[in-house]
Every structure is written in C-alpha cells, then in structure tokens.
Length: 340
Image 1 (cartoon, rainbow, N blue to C red):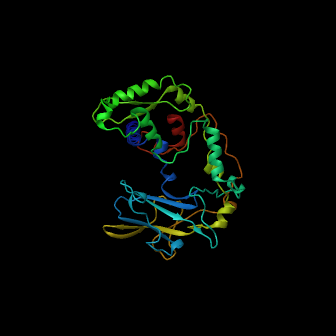
Image 2: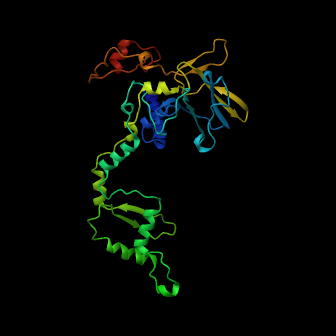
Image 3: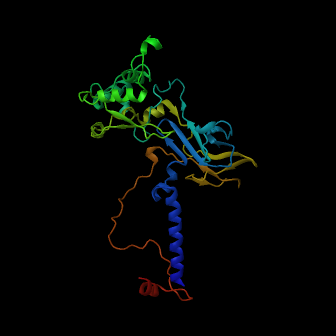
C-alpha cells in the first residue's frame, strides 16, 4: 500500500512539473513571480505595484499614504496599466520636497542603501555618452544624423540613383528593383576598407515574407569581441542622501495599505496576494498589508555565516508514523531499519 502511495505521489509530481515546464522555461522562472508581483522599490525614485485580477475593471492602491482614497493612485489607462492577461500595474511616484527641482534626466537612478554613489560626483550625462561612443565605436562606425530616414535615403540613392528632374521619356528603360539591387550589391564586395558593418537581405520568395537582415560573419565576430558599452545610467546613479534631500517617499515604512478593485459585482478591498507583511485590524475589521522598507541602519544584519553544506545525505523532512506498510503507527526503530 505504501509503495502504491509513493508511485501515485511521484506521478502527481511529474504531472505538475510537466504543467510548469510547458508554461515556463524552468522551475526557477516559474517561481520568480515575487520579483515582479507585489510592491517593490524602483531605482527611479518610485514604488511599483503589480497584481493579477483578470475580472476587475479598475484597480488602485488605498492606504495611509493617500488617506485611503480609491482614485488618487490608480492604474493608468491602456496597456501601461492593464494588459490582456489580467495584470494590473500601479506606480507610486515619490513627491518632490518644497524648493527642489525635478531631475534633469528621466533615467536618473538612486541607490537607497548607500549614502553616496558614483553620480554624486557631479558627472554629466552628455560627457558620459560621448565617452561611451569613443570607447565602443571606431571612427566611421557611428555618425550623427538629423533624421531617422537619412541613412535610408542615402542607401536608396546608392542603389537606385538620385531623384532627378528627368521626365519619363528622358529616362529610357529602367531596370527592375531586384536587378538594380544586385548590381549595387556586386559593387560592394571589394569595399573591405569600409569600417561600417556589412548587411544582406534574404527574400525567400513567399508572398507575405518579412525581410530578414543579416550581418556578415566578420562584422558579427567584430562586435562580439568588443567589451560591453559603458552603462551611463549606472555611472549617474546617486546615493540615498541625495534621494532623501530631494524626495519624500510615496509610501513610508510601516504604512498600511490594501488593493481596491471595481468589479461587475461591485467594489472590493483586498489584501494583496504578494504582500510580505500582513496584520489583522485592531477593531476586528478586514486585515491590511504593511509596507516594509526600513532604512539601512534598521535592517537586520546576520551575525554568523552560513553553515557549510556537507556532502553526505541530509533529511529535509520525514513522517515516521506513516512510513510503514502495516496498519499501525511506525516507530523510529522501524523507520531506521526498513526505510533507511
């Protein structure tokens, strides 16, 4: 009976793993929802909240930080606040302190743990981007352009000629586009001195085919061998002191909050499923979530290191009483003798 029970449990495990692997790449990806769902502090002076409620028509956060208002901090309209799979996304922007100016760059990041970071040294974004281009690109590989269509227009002129004032009678016979492209491509074979990457377009002849642009192997290996470009947003990241001086947190440490939904059955208030800290209401009403974001000096610090993992077998969990096949409660001696 116990052997059959183990076989049934093992089959249930395999079936569940198959369901997970058919939806996700691996178990780690399938169990990483906590990294996205719930409430998380974002580097760009804000707090992001995400939850799943496919039947809701409206979603907002209510709590101490907005006097429990259901309209002040809601999900934006369209796919920026609600996607087709039922996920809702709410952003709580930190508030500027009186007399402070907004950040010059929208991608300004902050380090909420350390007092100072690289961006506190007064670095300039334009200088960083110029340095990044000089370190990564070689002369001739990157050029400034006034329009996104400038390169396309120049390439078209190379292939098919300029858009001149000639009339149809003056032009005479014009080769078709494919012939002109092949003629232009033949002239590019011997241009090895050019530092620009080489490209080609493959057309399989299908009626609704999408052009696949591929690079030649030499260009591919050339860019693969290069080091990663300078991460200018990391170089501009400022420390906790700069953030505290400029902003008031949108939601403070230990603030109570709930999630508010408007559904076909009416308005609902719920504790978020991904809340990390939940307390009951003192008056016996509905429970509430607590935002937990203590300052660095209040965060618990481990006093001892992790124990070393030994190579021998370790038992995670065992049920001694039901380990036997007989209709009785098994003893530790029977568990040791029969199971081990």
